[in-house]
Image (cartoon, rainbow, N blue to C red):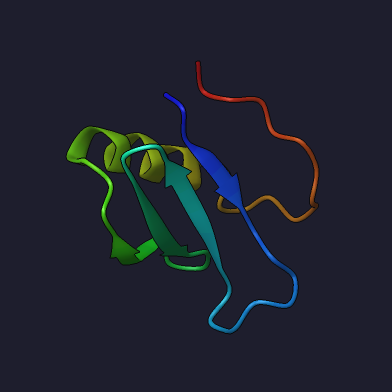
Length: 68
């Protein structure tokens, strides 16, 4: 889907990740999977939120395979 997920250890709170796509981006709170800000299209946003829910309880930082 061309979405890149990034987290920065020294970024401001609350803990969140950034989702970037050629046509937009989003910032999502990790603990609640709440969209803080987004310019992603609906399909990309749904895909990214599904990914976030699947990995919400992950505790280690490591490479995660893409959805497809």
